[in-house]
Amino acid sequence: MTAGLSPGRIVVVGAGQAGVQTAEALRAGGFAGELLLLGDEPHAPYHRPPLSKAWLAGEVEAAQLVMRAPEALARKQIELRTGVQVEAIDRPAKEIVLAGGERLGYTGLVLATGARARRLPLDQADAPNVHVLRTRDEASALAAALAEGGPLVVIGGGFIGLEVAATARKKGVEVTVLEALPRLLARVLPPLLSAWFEALHRSHGVQLRTGVQVEALEAGADGRVKAVRLAGGERLPCGAVLLGVGAQANDELARASGLACERGIVVDACGRTADPAIVAAGDCTARRLPDGSLLRLESVQGASEGGKAAAAALLGQDKPFTATPWFWSDQHGRKLQMAGLATGATQSVLRGDTAAASFSVWHYAGDRLIAVDTVDEPRTHLLARKLLDAGVWPAPAQAADAGFETASLLAR
Ligand SMILES: Cc1cc2nc3c(=O)[nH]c(=O)nc-3n(C[C@H](O)[C@H](O)[C@H](O)COP(=O)(O)OP(=O)(O)OC[C@H]3O[C@@H](n4cnc5c(N)ncnc54)[C@H](O)[C@@H]3O)c2cc1C
Image (cartoon, rainbow, N blue to C red; front, side, top):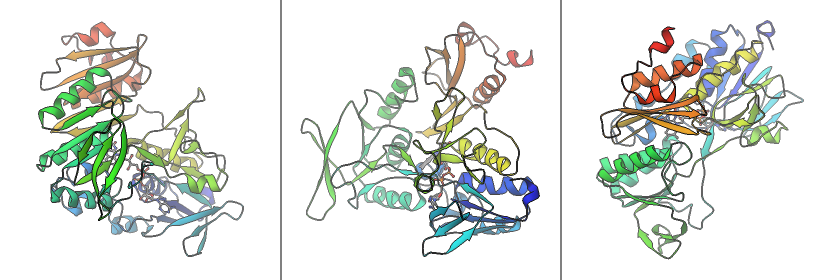
């Protein structure tokens, strides 16, 4: 589709980070037709990252969660409809079908359906005091559970589980984190940083159990889970459970309409699907890389940059999202920022001292820099993104030398 096809109607399914970004980028890019933003949640678009941090801690008001007020969207002639579930895509007719049967035609369709929290195939996983955390309503339910006092058992030592554990401690709630792998955040961080996070959580009173398997959730007569049982028989009494076992792409709509899906809607770097009228962006996607592998990002940056690329693609332009991925996490007042993806690193080099107020870890595949993790060093994080984007980097020995000016590499 080109801007010349306007006025047509572009429908954006999903009113989260990616949906809002795509809609706004369509307007900014000159799309003059009808623009509908449909979301199944009852709220106007809001920020998810605070749900496990400041919002859960009760430190921000609802107004501060809002990403875009309906009026701000209306000023851009973006029609927001909340509480609307899209149930099917009729690709031959170029129509979507809403719950209730209403059909809406489109000239362009954006799938920005995000992801949902994974559940565990355990009996009682749907008990009222077993929580997941993806939406604002789920966060409110979890906040109410924390207010009841716990103890809280968190199943899964990933970012969301650990952020919730940190927030719960702040609220004075007793917390145990259960992780099946031998260390925390094992899929995304090197052992050195896992060990640092373990020490951080322990120092704040979080009980950590790694290398453990959950065998059962034991419910009482009232249907609430009273204890989590581990393989081997140990029982951990609890007032509430959080399942922090990852997210699953909402790709069913796309799949049912015949679009390729593999752990997400398969797109190219511009967000294109095999259907020229349909693009996708954000947590619902899996991007096909030049080597044939698939990249799934679940991040604010992935959603917003993917959204911009997808909007451009619908307007007939190539603006691939190939920038260095980045992410952050806040736990116990410390900020981790990640630039690049450390998967495949053969060497990780510490710059500074993990006992200091800030430090960084530089990851290399062979002698190529692939990622930099920083703790409380926002400037190094920004520099690392620039270095990775520019394809220049310090040698591992230079990275390890705190006296070496890494910024000087960019000036060359
Ligand atoms: C608790 C939490 C903390 C996070 N912290 C960070 C962080 O610190 N840093 C970071 O970078 N990222 C963080 N993230 C991830 C980040 O929030 C997501 O990557 C981002 O929100 C993805 O945006 P999205 O628009 O792709 O998906 P979503 O935000 O999930 O939006 C998709 C929307 O589409 C709706 N939808 C789905 N199907 C339909 C349908 N059929 N019809 C209508 N609507 C539909 C969904 O209900 C949802 O509202 C966090 C996420 C969570 C849950």
